[in-house]
Image 1 (tube, rainbow, N blue to C red):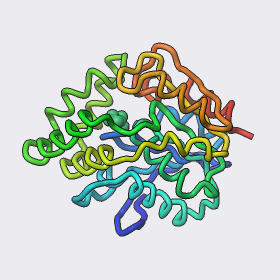
Image 2 (image 1 turned 180 degrees about the horizontal axis):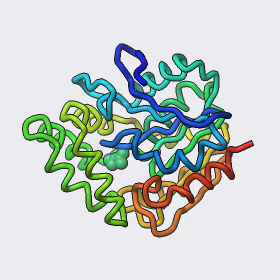
Image 3 (image 1 turned 90 degrees about the vertical axis):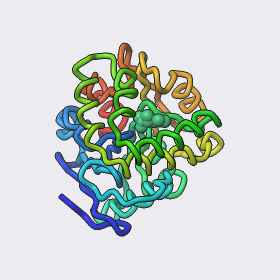
Amino acid sequence: MKIQVNGLHMNVEESGSGQPLVLVHGFPLDHTIWKKTAQHLSPYFRVITPDLRGHGASDAPEGIYHMDLLAQDLLGLFDALHLEKAILAGQSMGGYVSLAFACAHPERLSGLGLIVTQAAADAPERRAGRYAQAQQVLTEGVASLVESMTPKMAVSSTARLATRRVMLKTSPAGVAGALQGMAERPDRTASLAELRMPALVIAGGADPIIPLERAQEMAALLPDAVLKVIPGVGHMPMLEAPAALARAFIARFAK
Ligand code: MLT
């Protein structure tokens, strides 16, 4: 279904009932990546999977998608769905957005899930690379960026191909907006100690994009965190190990 939030049409899907659990995809992906995981979770939770602006079937306005702006869109989603509180969990860029939301609106969260993500900001060379990629995507399209990302996304070739298919559908405006937004995200490491809601930190044991140490650091600094490392899994645990990922959420958050 489409809802109107923060001046845009946001696409969002729902399944199950119970405690609300909002799952936020990473870059440049969409809500469909959660399908298998949501099947495992929907007996326990009301699972809500939005498409961030610029991704999936949500509008893709031009401009920089700062993580705070994407978090503001999610606040609009919470309000539109009358979610007084929910568990919010995000993968990679979805985790950057979830952290931005947790810092701005901690009172709206009953739990926080940080999946293959980090609190750290980009190093200067990574930041410069993102601006260059954004320009390239706007002039040449998304294909060459997607081809360079695909081998790093997942260990299994099936998950890699599924990820590639979703990435190729993302518009140049969406990809460029997110790249620039990620480049400009602040380091949130110092804020972790303030985030008192129950947290679950998930790492892929074979993720070449976000090293395991980033997850260990976050889990050590968050006041109430559980760390779960899923062995042999890359950057797409929701496709590579949906049952294990769901089990971790059920163990941590189901009442
Ligand atoms: C993602 O998977 O969301 C991005 O690759 C994260 C990043 O580039 O920092």
